[in-house]
Image (cartoon, rainbow, N blue to C red; front, side, top):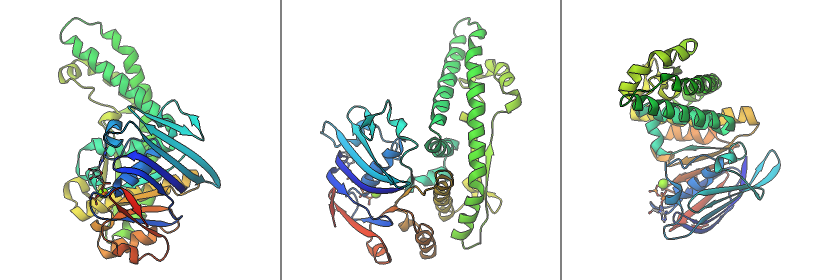
Length: 355
Ligand SMILES: Nc1ncnc2c1ncn2[C@@H]1O[C@H](COP(=O)(O)OP(=O)(O)OP(=O)(O)O)[C@@H](O)[C@H]1O
Ligand SMILES: [Mg+2]
């Protein structure tokens, strides 16, 4: 997967940019607040996912402008494609000039992985962040999965709202059956995809993490399921009363977690800052390998501020590991640039490229 060109108009502080990266490492450098992360964020939107910064569409077009326009030309398996995103009040997406019914439909065409400093929350914070990671990773490979998630979430919301209503008035609990059937059906599919993904990622993650830590640490990854698949339907029926009181659906994929152990200890509770960063980064690199194994190509790697967080030996490991992929790395210090044997350095100042 290679970006050939990216044209950006009125996206955050990027007024009018034409970006032609090299096929290998591209270091995007400059002072704070110049637009480096904005550039990476613009690329990321072409995966069909939402902004990795959790931003709303209305926040990402340039303040005061009517619309942002992003135009990407990329090469995938030797074929050139053109994708366009127009952000007005909503995001609209086009592939090779064909309008898509939703921007999520971009998924499965242009592949990227992103690492940003906020990914530390993937290890440190609650299960929601880890579910988000695995859902985005799977959704990028199997757009159908996104629909399962949507259907599932809708059914859970509807079940919860009927349960809530039942506290105020007499409600026929049979009303819940259709929603619970949907929760079971889509829930099982979601869990199956997630377990399969963990299975795919485990050997890769183990190897990369071991390499990054200089063979000193071993990582384990486990899926923690809140629902017993066989009795899930019955569980939902049995838990109606307690769920109504708690105001939630107490089991299912929306309550599951993914656990990382370093040398047998839970990373969330026991890992150091550096270990947490390393786990998050290795997870993203492993995601890239899974994409490569499935699509035949490495995705574009977007690494935001990754170098400032790693010691020299880990920096070197990363630079070596990503040889042959197209990579966009942002950093503040241009000294990373001097260590590049191949590739391109791009300076960003006040939302403009100074090459
Ligand atoms: N919607 C918007 N319209 C105009 N400007 C915006 C918008 N959103 C963000 N900005 C501005 O974009 C600027 C650059 O942001 P960005 O995060 O890309 O910086 P950066 O170069 O990555 O800096 P750092 O090195 O600190 O990470 C910020 O100063 C911010 O005020
Ligand atoms: Mg930044």
